[in-house]
Amino acid sequence: MDLQEEKQLIERAKTDPLAFGELYDLYYSKIFNYILRRVGEAATATDITSDVFFKVMKNLAKFEWRGIPFSSWIYKIASNEINNYFRRKRFWFLSLDTLFEDHGFEVVDKGDLQEDYIEAQKQLERNEDFKQMQKLLKKLSQKYQEVIILRYFEDKKIREISEITGKNSNTVKSLLTRGLERLRNQFVHETRLRTKLRRGEEGGENRSLETQPISAVGVIEVEDRNYDN
Image 1 (cartoon, rainbow, N blue to C red):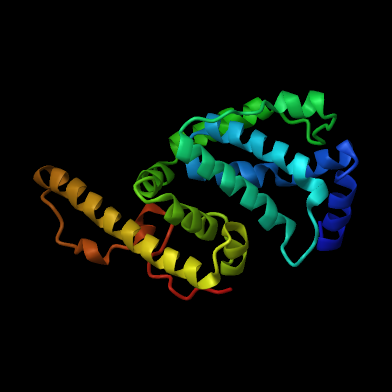
Image 2 (cartoon, rainbow, N blue to C red):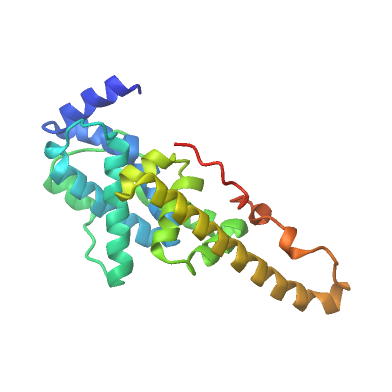
């Protein structure tokens, strides 16, 4: 779907429940996966995603094209809901059934959302690299988690991250630099601990851990400092 088609869909979705269902299908997987990477639990991600789309539906009529893409607008809503969740550690979740039954829109893709949730949880359990990275990320403050996941998992540019977070580009770059350095230090520290535990059994290795990139867990290369806009 090109930009013009998306604009037309958004305008129709403001008054047409079926068009909103198409918009939901277009963005559900992206938003769900973003939230899943932030919270690390499929059930919680499903609930937060439901609440995000309820707020999108309530506020869509107010959305105007003023230089900020619709994707940045919806990611910003998702980020706000994630931050609310972590601040309160408790959340009132809106059931998807409420969206479907009380507000009249239908999902164009009739795939089973429950099956999607189960598969997402299985993938989390199978993906050791992600679990290790999630463990490290959770030790960072939310401001670092947000920009790192948007940049390296969602492939957002600095300009887009700035639109989503409401922070200027220099602040975003600074948060990425400091956050990645903290992430690297945690990675090195935990790798040292694991190496010490294995050394007695395997004889140890002399490779310097300081030279091991964070991409050793398959996600991020901390030497990336050439941020684009």
